[in-house]
Structure formats: structure tokens, C-alpha cells
Length: 275
Image (cartoon, rainbow, N blue to C red):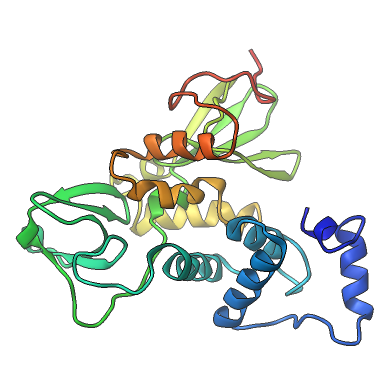
């Protein structure tokens, strides 16, 4: 779609044009420049920031290889700060605060201030007493919650393909005959014959850190997945007042996509239905 919006028949034609252009797009750029590049194209063409970031990363327009996962996370969190949250401020949703409960010092996004205070941690939504949440004088770094992009495990399907899923058992990626497909998180996956959990393989319950996290990252790298899944796009909906779970935010994303409302985890008749 991006190539067509720019007036080319397909992405190959755009790449060829870029290579012969007198002023080609730079192949390497720091994340700040990449951020402006993504936002500039998004504004010029009226396309969602997340879609533009994904397409640019998958292409060879900017680099000879995709942005690293760290690059992807940095760019997306910077987009949120600029487009979604704005400057951080005490009591303002989207500000990164510190959770001091139980002697911790954990960063989290403020979802809703009050008694209790609602926050979004790296591993999901939570509730704290107001005095347990501190807003630092110096703004903390933004982050993309692991709950939205880090694999929890993968399913093997009857046809031999593999579906990588998130902590909430929502699909992120399908791999079939070496081809990777990004999935919408409301799809119901049928035909599962086996499942694998990274935390179980690492003999730990800490799925988002340590050895389990490294196993998940290695699995993504093995399949050359350096982009972010569609599930990350639920981030704005997680800050809506009546959204209490990641599943709720997926339903909101589905509605916003014009697909129609289907409760989380409801069975869908999809291209992955194998029964």
C-alpha cells in the first residue's frame, strides 16, 4: 500500500527507483532520524504510524537488513511519546512512573491516577496504592511492554506450520515453509497438535526475563523476525478507562479495524481454520 500511495506499481518498483534516484533515502540512520522518517511518511500519506514502520523495516528502503528488535522497540515507544502521550507529567496517563511496592523500583506506565492507581508494567496491567507510585523528577525511558511483543510460546499446527503466541495466548506470527506472516491478534487458531513454552523449557516462571526471554528472542532471530507484531498496536486502547485486560484492548483494536466486534478468544472462521 505504501508503494502504491507513492505512485509505484509495487515495492520492487519503488526500490529500483530509490536506487537510481539522485537523492536516495539513506541506508543507515539513527533512531531519531528513523522516527522522523516514519512520521513524515505517515503524515504525508495518511497511513498509520505502525504500518509505515513495519513496511519500511521489511523493505530495503532504509537498510540492507531490517532494523534490529531494539531499534523497533525504541522507534515505537518514541512514536507513542510523540503521538499518544505527549510530555510526561505527574498524574498524567502515559507518564513512566516507578512502582515502589514491596521494595521494588520498577518502571511502569501510569494508566489512571487515584486510589487505587492503575499502571501498565512490562508484563501487563496492575493496581497499586497511590503512595506506592512515584513520578521521578527526571523522565524515565519509554518502553514497549513485553506482554505485547515477546513470545510466550508457539503452537505446531496440523499442516506443519507454526504460530508464535503472546503471554495472553494471542497469535503474533505464523511460519509456514520458511515464510513469516504477521497475524491479527483476534484470530482463533485451529488445528493445534503441539505447543511449546519458553518459560517451561527454561525451567522458570519468569517468562519476560532471564533465560526464558533469551530463548524467545533466539526463536525470533532464528526465523529472522525483527519487526513488531500487530498485537503491539493495542497500546492506545490499554489506556481507555474501561479496558481492564489485554483481551479487552484487542477487541477495541478489532472494532477500530472495521472487522466487527467479536469477544476475545471467540472462534473465528479464518484462513488458519484446519478442523
